Image (spheres, rainbow, N blue to C red):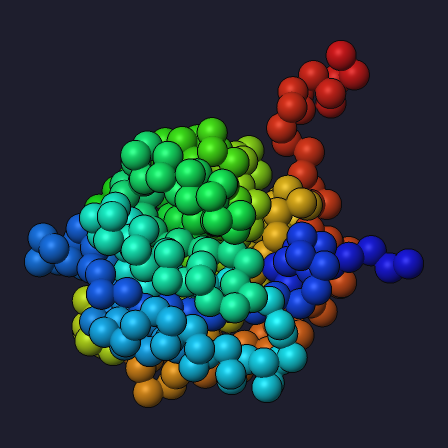
Length: 315
């Protein structure tokens, strides 16, 4: 049996639920702290990340029903995750968010609710309510945290609005309730280098997280980053450099962390830059070839924790 190159999210879900499970995106009428203050992360577009979802004014049940019909026909999935994807969902008042969760949980064959948010919008009262909801409804709840980079200088430059400490606090707080956590990372933000990508893998591997969603930087039109890109104030690393960073990240990543995505996906009309003008599946094939050339698999260099220096010296 050949060694697994990496632990894909689809396999993680199949092990957990016994069959194929598919995420159905849901847009809620919500914003985020940055936007409320009249700013935004420099990489964020007016629509956030909700390119695939229906408008937030459409009821949750209707959104899920429409997405489900497409997915069942194309992917033959019969269990689903209601994915509150866009902006910062815990920036809603708790009772309002719980009402949307109630509507999603009531839909047929929804086995999990996935709630996307920011590290600085995680609080005990929300987690307590989610824990009670999970117990009463018998449905899993997972949380996605947008970190993007462990380089706090870069976080400041992109106007993220939080640092590394808030992320660590959120993950440790969530872990007390045993909710699976997925972390979003962009491995080639302007100002970051290979060492930032490698340190990102190390930090995530030391924490109680279950999944990571990796992004190659895309630059949406009508974003602050887009203007900086067009003015020549920032540059994007080469495709070869990104593939190198991705390979090193994966080699250092704890082997039981599921990997949900390797490259960004965005409609061409919405992007000033994305994936060096190449398709994500072609890039995936190139990356897999590189991993094989290096004799890398996920976690093959995961030996830096648990008293590594003592182990190295046989103590």
